[in-house]
Length: 117
Length: 113
Image (cartoon, chains in turn green, yellow):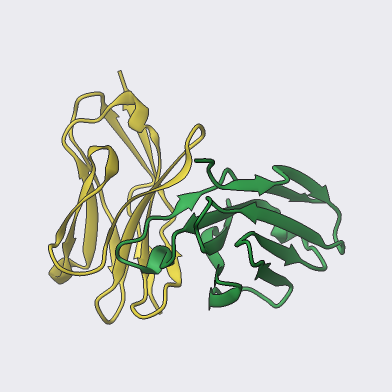
């Protein structure tokens, strides 16, 4: 069974641009979560989607948004990029309950490394 | 608001030695607690989690963690460390009801042969 895939793996953008990152979960998984990892702030939870609905949202500005499609693939978008948005963006999938479920296990993708110049 | 402290930024152990990584949390009610491992070759991986019940939780790769409410701790242990365990370890706490986790800053484990 294929793992979680994220595209692109590396991305360079300039301030003010917008970016869209994609995550394809493991086949059959319906929950997708997004995380941001930076040297300064560490690992932070962005949001979680389940069955095309946002189920949980972390403390990020409205420039960060996401969506999930009927095939469970998810995208996250960052508008008006700032230097501080440079980070590794991780996606995780789980069968249904997500990390907040006592029986589910999350599986992480390799991440997208975003650099904002 | 919930918070997590991992007091040790780096820990060095010899291969075959036992390991304990410390994690202290702050949260008013019973928390959800997690340990993750991140290595260059394997990416980020969930090791184990505690939601309720038995306070000693078994995870993958021979790791276990013990929830101690009186000490607000959730320390990760392994009886015998392998060189492949060298990685960054993150503890996280989530609020009950909805999962919005807060992560610790991580502990880097170095394993000497």
